[in-house]
Image (cartoon, rainbow, N blue to C red; front, side, top):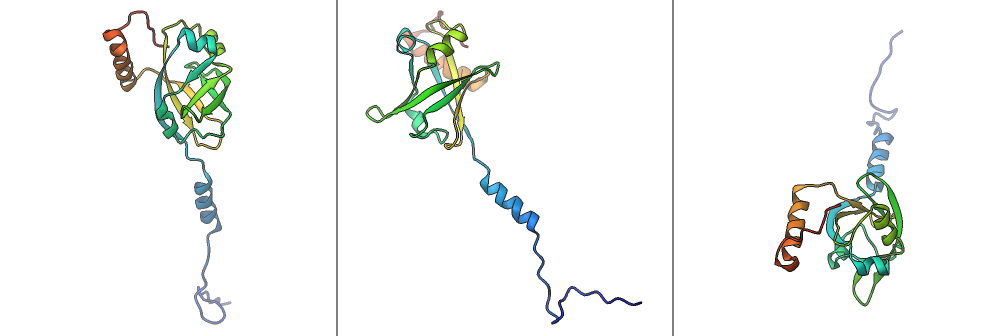
Length: 163
């Protein structure tokens, strides 16, 4: 028997083959969420934010793609990976996000004292519940802390501790 194999159809036209698995992979890549990891800030535990159970995020947080004004919650994550779901709100009058109902518990559970400092990284895609993770110590975070502490009363405050 003799077989004649050609890449052409019965009308001698080239057959155009598609690769559905490649198309699917490209579609999956387009659907994948784009998480933002680039916004971090310094937060200080104060008597007033503990009393009010409220922590204002810096104004610059409004530029983070991880947050959106409709978001009602944020998850705080400490260095050990433990998490606390807290209320997140946006104040139209102040133009700032703030954490409410849960900040005090987070601080108590992490044995924070007034003056303690956190460097938080806000992580999210703007669609799902964002995370606010306590950052491990890194050079750029140390620079942020030094800048903050040197501004405080013109010298480094010895009572502050980095969490």
